[in-house]
Amino acid sequence: MKTKTFAITAYLLLFLLQSCVEPIVMVPEEDMPVVVHCVLTRNMVLDHDSNAKDPIQTLNLYYAKRISATGDYEIISDAQVSISGGGQLYVFTWNGDAWTSTFSPMYGTEYVLTVKLNDGRELHSKTRLPSKVTIVSEPVYSGRSVMNSLAGYLKVTGCSEDVDIWMTALSGREYDIQHFFTNHPGADDVNLFSKSLQEMPVFEQIVSNLHSILDLPWCNGDKVLFENYLQSCAFLPAHFQFLKIHHPKDFDNGILSPLLLHHDHSSGTTEYYQCRDGFLLFVDTIDVASGYIGMTPTRIPVRCSIVSPEYDTYLGNLTNNAYHIDELANMYSMDLSYTNIEGGIGIFGSLYYSDGISGLL
Picture 1: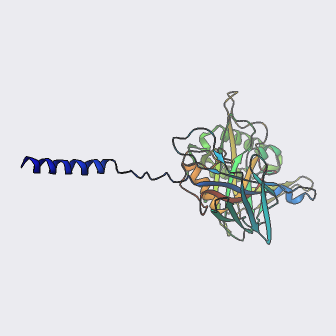
Picture 2: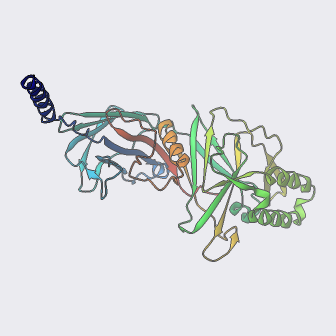
Picture 3: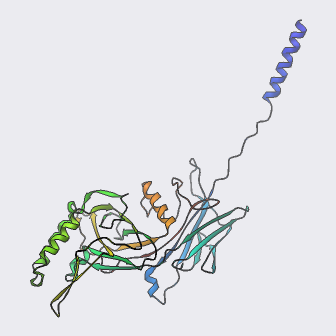
C-alpha cells in the first residue's frame, strides 16, 4: 500500500514539475504605429506675384512613442513618399530634418498621399485644397482711417461650396492675448470668453471714436445709423485667441441696415452699402507685459485660413483637447482621437491663407 501511495505521489510530482518547466511563450509587443503630419499650404498673396517661388511642402514621418517612452521621436528617413494630384506626381525627399517637396497645391484639387516603408507597409490618405474664394475687407466707416484699426466687414464671395475659416491675430508678440468678435452665425462657440464686446476695453475705444466722427459737419442725420450700429455690436461674444467660422456658399447674415458708408469729399455725398454677404469682425488685445489693456495703436494683422474639412476637424480636435492651434505645427499628438491616415495615424490636410487683411484691422 505504501509503495502504491509513493508511486502515485511521485507521478503527481513529476506531472507538476513537467508543467512548471514548460516554456512560456511571450507575445511580443506590437510595433508602434507610424505617424504622418502633412498640411499642404498655399499663400494667396503669392497668387499676384509672377516672380514668386513655389512654397516648400513639408511632411513629418516618425514612429509614435509609448506612454512610458522618453526622448525624441524615432524619425523615419528611409522610405518612398509622394503626393499626386492635378495630373502631377510630387516626390518628397529627406533633407535631414523632414520630407520636403516644392510645389503650390491648386485650388479645388484632390491630392493623394502614398508612403511606402522598407518593411513593405504602405500608408495612404487624401485631401482636397478648397476652391478659391474672394476675401474682401471693408472698413465700417471709410471716412476716417482710425476706424480701420477698430472694426471692419469681411466678405467671402465667390463661394461655390461651404468653406471653413480659421482666423488668428499675428501681433508678433507672445505676451498678447487676442479676442475676436463677430456677428457671423457660423462662428464656433468652442472658445467663447466670459465677456461680450460691451464689457471689453475695446468697446469704449469704438464708442469714443464713433462719437468723435458724429461731430463732423457732414455726419448730420447719421447719428441714428451709428447708434444702431453700436447697439448691434454691443453684445457680440468674445472668442479667445482665434475665431473659427463655417461659412456657407449662399451666406446671408440678414443685415438690412446700411452699416457701411462712404463719403465722397469732392462731391460731398455719402453713399450707403448693404452688407448681407459680409460679416462684422473686431480684434482687441491685452498687452500683459506693459499692463496696457485695450486696442493697440497699430493695426493687428490677421491670418485668414481656408482649410480642408479634415484639417478643420483636426484643428477642432486640438482645441477640444486644450491645445492652442499653433502648438502642434509639425507633430501629431497621441492624445488626439482624430486621424485620416490609412495604415497609420496622423493628419494629411490642406489650406490656403492670407495675412494682414488690408483695410480690415
